[in-house]
Image (cartoon, rainbow, N blue to C red):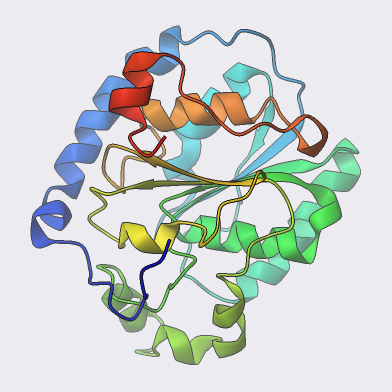
Length: 258
């Protein structure tokens, strides 16, 4: 990604205004997909921690966690209520990761939706030996303090404090890639955050950007996203291969960046 984040503008009013309607449509399509989807093989049962987006809670990630459980993995919510973007959440999440790692004696996959993905990347930097991989869904880690359609709400909730004033040192670390396999999923129809901020600046064998079609609020139930997650959960660093579309239709329609 070559764009200067200073020049990136917030998503259009059209995308922003249609977010809820599009997300509802994606949820409707997701029901039969999740019900009838059958994986080629049962998952290995490793722990998967799912982190919600800004102002969301574990309720928003329940369909995704149920899908992960159906695949044969142990899914966990973050269990901290709504995600109010508090810096102290990171310390609590580090303790949760340590607890899950010690209890399961296995590395953990982190799936983070929007701001949850930003937190996930930091967790992997803090405890890389405990993290198997990261999957981010529309997470603006390249510039959480840049123009978006949610920053105003953050500023209002956090005593009108601007994001860059809350944790300036931490914000500078967000764009730095985590030292574990990472899949950054984004949509150019995102009405909440600029899609350009949701990509790794440089892709490597272990750091892949994947474009899907859909809304920001529907990423956690979007069938295209669920297919990626089902595929990625099968791998760890020793067996890792980049994601590839399954057939001509997927390649042409579902994952245009690939």
